[in-house]
Amino acid sequence: MFYELAEKALALEKEGRKVTRLNVGDTNLPTPERAIEAGLVRMRQSKSGYGSSAGLSELREKIAAREGCDVKNVVVGPGSKHLLYGLMSILCKKGDMVSFPSPYWPAYRLACSQLELKAEPISTDMVNGWQFQPEDVKKARMLLICNPLNPTSTVYDEKSIRSVIAECQESGTHVVLDEAYKGLSFRPIPRYDGAIRVRSFSKEFNMEGWRLGYAIAPEDIAKRLIAFNQITATCVAPFVQAAGLACLEDEKEILSKNRKEWLSRSETAQKALQDGGFRFAKPESGIYVFAMHPGIKDSGEFAMMLLDKEGIAVAPGSEFGGFGSYVRICVNRPEYVLADAIARMGRLLKL
Image (cartoon, rainbow, N blue to C red):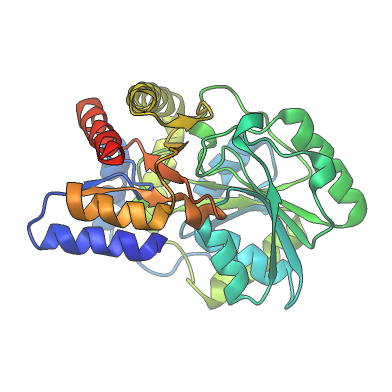
């Protein structure tokens, strides 16, 4: 349903229908100009041949400095999704359990299904701010934690994450932190050593279509992940990596500006949702609000009706772990557009 709805929204746009797409995690912000220029310079140098499957050395060095690790621990890939899939492929075998807090990004469950792994969600609830309890984490081959969380924009409690990392180290469970939204958190998130960390340039630097991410892993795992790159994507285009390097060189300014934008958009969306009778846990990061409404009985049906009647696309909560009264809203439009779209959602639910 998640991807079907996204395709339908795109198809309606091609037919000439005006669609407000709040369903996909697209920042709808321009890629930083210095990143574009750096990519163009690299292309004009005709440096378009194959590169290292580990990533350009200058980019890996910059990432290592950012993450406080050795270059040998850095693996660059075509987006964080590719790297997460690669880690699941190399660290798990058929029938192994992969655990993750629920609600969760649908790609986790879909990847488990494709790799014939057992997905084991960890139950959480809105009343407790979607926080997971370490004692609820079952023994698994891999524990996958998205922090900040897609779809709720929750930032997990530091004590809980450190506790579960320590426990998993003793039991032999691999802890993988999906930190795609870390730079957009409204409060600082510490560096968690002892876990494999995966980050993306898509959301932090508005580079979704460029496809660039990286993983920080122990050297033996990093080598296996590089081998996965070699037999799949081969390497990330050098001009894309040059653009990513330019972003990291100006990281403080770019992320500060983006966080302000997401906080403003989020606050506008939250007010409109409250006015429309929705309930939610206060987001602690960009770029989503995960909201429920008593008038939504089947989030999939509601999302389709909303798209057909109002031309507004949202992601049904059922796709994030069976939350049938919820929808995920990406606050990726100007504030006046968000306020209008959410108000129309509320009015539709009152009919």
